[in-house]
Image 1 (spheres, rainbow, N blue to C red):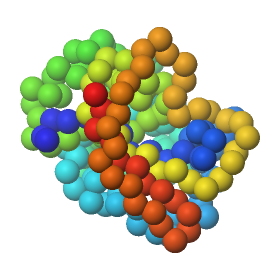
Image 2: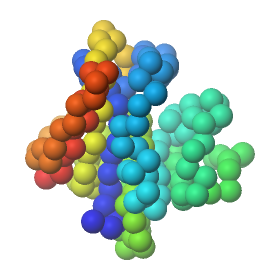
Image 3: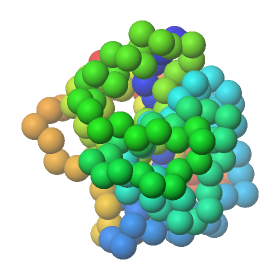
Length: 173
């Protein structure tokens, strides 16, 4: 569905997306396989992420979405950003409305956990792809921070990989 808000994210088996210090280095041993991300990105018109995720990616020099509009949800100004990056300081529900109205493709809510939770709490997430990595981190940044709102998901499919990774695809609602 064009104009859908989608999540594509990896989490440890115990539900963490990063270590306590925000590192995603624990994912490196799994980087050699394609888990469908390239196909996923073909349908994306825009990427939305929280400021911490943007800052982490920018500091690492990772910016693979040069051809996509990128919106960073933030409360602070962004002095130096690539041309395709814009900040969003306003109400998230207004952003959802605007992106759905202009939709020519889907929107990837790339993270982090607070941003994903905020869009989920608005009921904006339509599809959720979760890569469950065969690692127990023991502690870290949880995929789902606490919220007063729950969500029901219907499993569309599951795919297993030889290295133990499982991709779960859900429709939300």
